[in-house]
Image (cartoon, rainbow, N blue to C red; front, side, top):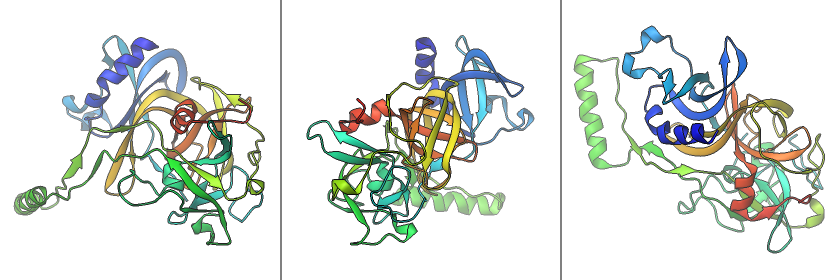
Length: 338
């Protein structure tokens, strides 16, 4: 797989310049809707398009180097932030969120490697208001509500924890705020209005910045008010690397217990942050659709209840999660079973 992973890394940016392509990963090739045993380069698209509607230069090549490609339709992948009542002790799988966020999922109870204190694990965009660390969207010590604000959580009565630390999430593109680009946008659209009135140009500021994780920690205000058993799943038994074709499951605020299958590893994916900005994530795990808005932050476990990932984005057809080893390393935490 190492050669294929190198090929994916070397060609991901060129492939993602093709129309409709939002991600690149590694997985088993599917033929006629059935999985084969042949590893291939997964090219992930919002929706499949009939070849006759694409110019030759816009088509995904059948092979990249010596490896075959497989075009996988995953829909529009977005951050997913939306059982919802107050719970004490609070357990993973329930509604939680920064006071300025709607609501997401309490993913797991982990332990600080330095102090040994329990910490609530979820996404940056759930506990830290989707911050890049410089935008003022949050500050250490901010109130974390359980349930989240969308589920009628309010301070001070529903404050379960305080924001302890986070890994910044950097945008890779956004609507332009440059005066020169804005002027060019106006000029181009004035020209199009005369010759192609059904078309409109919008310029974006694009930066080649990638993210590895979307994660953050909150420190409980009272350790007795949290418990480690994931609702409907139980205790985490350890940590494992995900495998292609493996069955995984999660317990989330919106859709509860759901299961899926790992389809693609070492995935680079464009994730929409909102209508005008997006972020690039690399070394992600793509599974079949098993999440809905509000499930972000859920811990993903295998059939032995070993943690494999932290869910943060998805669509109607696919779910995306961080490799849990990247998360624990970035935050310097461990599970109780380790």
